Length: 537
Ligand code: GLN
Image 1: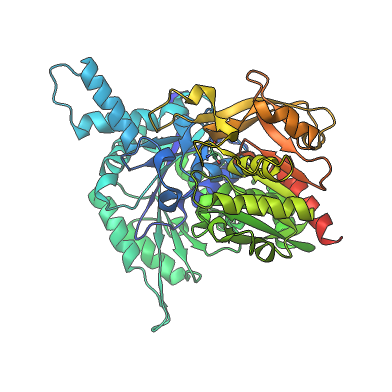
Image 2: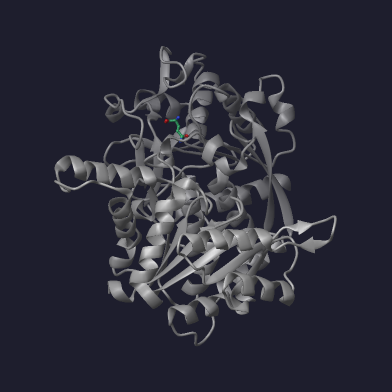
């Protein structure tokens, strides 16, 4: 099985942020639409064991998989494009590689040997690069190498790709993503940065088979020929990647240039037939031809870097398309919201989404946003910290417990309606120690969520340390906020609702991680539908 698995490596050159993740996802999408089983993995050259300990300002959202891995946000794209879950094995960092090798060294596994980058670190990288391929589940494994060619820290990865190309022969293709800038003054597209970037890759012994060139303008045949000549590739292997209206258009843009066929030919795989893009095209049609617009307020404290809420904004896009509606997001900084200005800041919104988060900064603003949504009957979706804020708001203003709080925000609060989870009390280490990954949840008969999911039991992904304090459950339920979802093993409240409100749902889990193009999340779909109803009333 292992020998027949095909490997595609995607490297980036010239600059970061060219969208390697989207190109990898789009190519995977085309290959999957031809019937191949495909997965994508990302190798990140930083020393953190995982991005869970990184500030969202540094790295954007931390994406969580079913098996509880805290991963790079590109894995979210992989799942959204492929509608297949990823796992811990799909995201590897330099930190994890070194940790494994150093642990082995301490165990004596290399006794007598000097442990070196080559071969020990590269062997471990290669082992992990082939792990999913060897599982027998996938015919094609796409590996995205984080960072940019030429970075010191990327060298062991490029060296591993060089060795694997040698070992895998025809079962391996290397794609290099670069930038072809447009010089306004002379009105020209410039190929030199790409030439240099490919040279750098060649110096490391890797000859790319395919170039994907990000550009603001279409590449003429002449430019393609020039790039092909200088970079040792065939002209049909120079693919342009123009700025798209939406990332979901990229598969079609690559398909129009037969990138799937070029790749399959190089891998020695059959190219008969064509990708079945029917469902994808339907989605795209609905997305680019909406018949209405709704405005949703997204209240969070990292709104300056929109990547911090990537899965939420994508889930809203999926839900909008499902409803034939364009979702416009009003990004609202929770730190700016006060009791006196919140009403104005939220005026005109058709839905309010209070985002996940950590720590006290901006938390009172989130509570204000909940208050406005609750009092004014605006559809409300609270996620994780947003759900916790909704419980605190209800306790303060409906149960009349003005000191109600989360013990995360005020450790001495008299009414910790949100409190540290029992199992978290002994945890001192930071990395990977939250309640993480998919947990079961039973939905309460007759609740809004029960109807929306259409099932009595679900599994959703978590990432938190604090929880609803069940000591307050009876009082909150008597006052009109109900537990609509409960963890069957621990009795933890995972969903709260206010049945007297037009649409009010707070979830302890992160539904955004599971929304995909093929499967828009039911809570987001219903939230956008409720926002549309609110708009017309
Ligand atoms: N800070 C909260 C907790 O740890 C919520 C976490 C989140 O929103 N992801 O429970």
